[in-house]
Amino acid sequence: MIPRDRPDTRAWVLHPDLLGEDRRHAAEFALEEAVSLARALPGLEVVGSSIVRLANPTPATLFGSGKVAELSAFFADNKVELVLVDGPVTPVQQRNLEKAWGGKLLDRTGLILEIFSDRARTREGVLQVEMAALAYQRTRLVRAWTHLERQRGGLGFVGGPGETQIEADRRAIDEQLTRLRRQLEKVVRTRELHRAARARVPFPIVALVGYTNAGKSTLFNRLTGAEVLAKDMLFATLDPTMRRVRLPNNGPEVILSDTVGFISDLPTQLVAAFRATLEEVLEADLILHIRDISHPEAEEQKADVEDILSDLGLPEEVPVLEVWNKVDRLPPEDAGALARRAERDGTFVISAVTGAGLDPLLDAVERTLDQGSVTEELTLGFDEGRRRAWLYEQGLVVEETQGEEGHRITVRWSPRQSARFRSL
Ligand SMILES: Nc1nc2c(ncn2[C@@H]2O[C@H](COP(=O)(O)OP(=O)(O)OP(=O)(O)O)[C@@H](O)[C@H]2O)c(=O)[nH]1
Image (cartoon, rainbow, N blue to C red; front, side, top):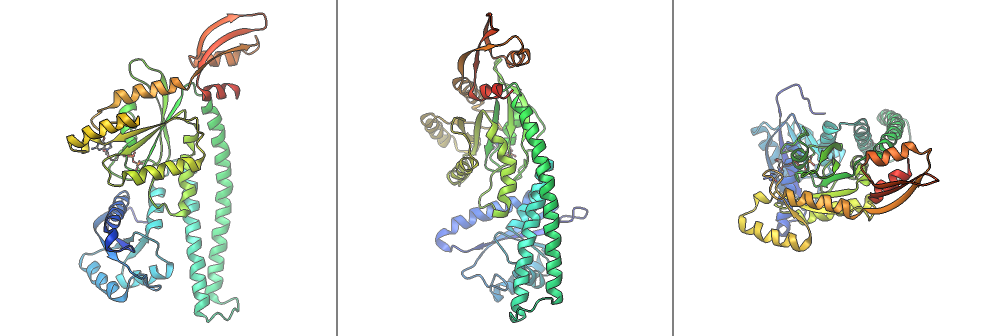
């Protein structure tokens, strides 16, 4: 963990470039993202960053010996205390580089874990991140152990002191993982209860999803007036936040849900933690996919988000509206062309900062929620007062007459509202 009780740690971000000159831009975008990630972490001062060409990773030190020495002098001159390497670094490489550079080193997974742990707000988020961190540590122990074994010439005898220690560490991690897993099961059960309770909330749920830094929290705050952390930081939101809001012009009330941002090349150990925080979108009646249209990799980001949503098993009937945010950052002529394209594609161009384009978007939200709705006639027995009251609370009742067998009620509702009613 990075100490928080002292002046900011001076950090340098290194992106090892495995691709070479013709993919230079990819390396530059990757470095930029890595720097934004590092800036998202309190307690760090990012003093600079660089791309290091890496044709053939060296098993012991990742970079070649000349490069290691050159960087060592450079880090000493610049008083760098922590080096963030934007890629995987083996435990052996980490140990050797830390020795050579005289400071700490964190690889990409380590960095994202630090951010997740800093941001996790719900009990479930915290547990998921702790488990991911332990699982990560465990793989590093195993690798160190194999390495030790190899150092001993692979004779295969057991019980050497180093090995016993690593075995003991591994057992301790396993025990802790089991404990955390049990706690998590309990938390998930409680969450299911909450979810069932929320399934009875009388308003449709609109979820904001999108890449990290796309502007979800800014839009959320603009629409709800809520105090959700919005900074120029990645991962300002790790756990979804929900607020009730009435759409303008006396439109319907909805629950707006802000979710954790996506990130490219998420290390595999972190996928479960990330998904756990995103599962909430499966309950939404409508999804707004917020995109930073000024981002150079906007298209790749869109594909990533769509892939994950479909992997999560988002039901097909849940409508998704695509929202092109940050239009204020484009030159006016590009913004004009974008608006024409958006009209053709059925997407929405907005600026969450200036408020431009919000009215048409909110009209579309209202229309889309209504379009999915159908009118149905129900008969409720006289003993079903609670369910009848629920229909009224939701404002779903169009007409009611009394028949011999009970109340005949005409309702207009979305498929999800109808499903919620049936689960009452
Ligand atoms: N120029 C401009 N900047 C914007 C706009 N919307 C958001 N931003 C800025 O983009 C940065 C990120 O915005 P957030 O709202 O925190 O982004 P997010 O999608 O919630 O990010 P995560 O929580 O990391 O997923 C902040 O600095 C915002 O001020 C916009 O419409 N125009």
